[in-house]
Amino acid sequence: MCFQRLGFNINVDDVQFDLTVQGITDKIDSVLNDKKGLNETNSLIIFVMTHGETSEDLHARDEVFKCSDIWKKFNKCEELKGKPKMIVFQACKGENYSKTEGDDTVTDLLDFDAFKINQLGPDMLIFYSTLEHNYSYRSEYSGSWFIQELCKNFLSYGKRDDVISIVTRTIKCVCGNYYLQDKIESEDFQKQMPLFVSTLSKKFYLNRNKDRHLLLEINKRMAEVSCQLAEVLDIIKNY
Image 1: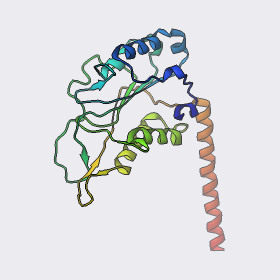
Image 2 (image 1 turned 135 degrees about the vertical axis):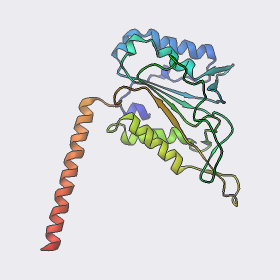
Image 3 (image 1 turned 120 degrees about the vertical axis):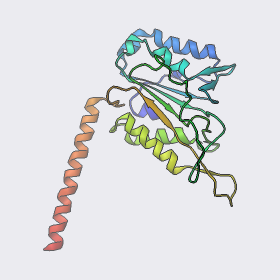
Image 4 (image 1 turned 90 degrees about the horizontal axis):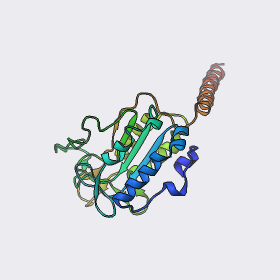
């Protein structure tokens, strides 16, 4: 729903559930083999939501696969050359957690071997829901902290701001708006810190240039009107 409201065409077949590793591979290959569709598209966005562990391990229905198994498939795709490719991973990366304050624990931001040379291609944005070794929290009522905030920010700012700005705002919201307290008397609040890695070579916008230009022009005019109203109010007060 979030991306459909932003103008993306999402078919029923684009949403897959509980796949095996082979099923994941087959689905990615079917996307890559759609040369006509890729030529006509402006960008590619993939969401992977599953259970995960340290060292970039993700769980399919039958066995474990790597995060890089997803993005490496698109490194040499000529039809997507020069086009932004965003891959979002909603998954745990361990059993630790960030704390609100007083935490001297040393943790890795990413697995040391996550981005070996030639693995991550150009014009890619990889967005993780949490740091290496850490939990990625999910409410049984409202769902994943990370996905909820990401969708909220895309819906609120997706027609105006570039994706990196929205991603940065999402990180701030997850860090600032959510915490878990195991015991009422405990001062140890568990937090979550998302992380992104980017090789984007230009700003990435989700909406068409014409729509964005009109929206920016409207915002500019509204700001000018607000300034003029403020000046009129000052004149009235001083009259």
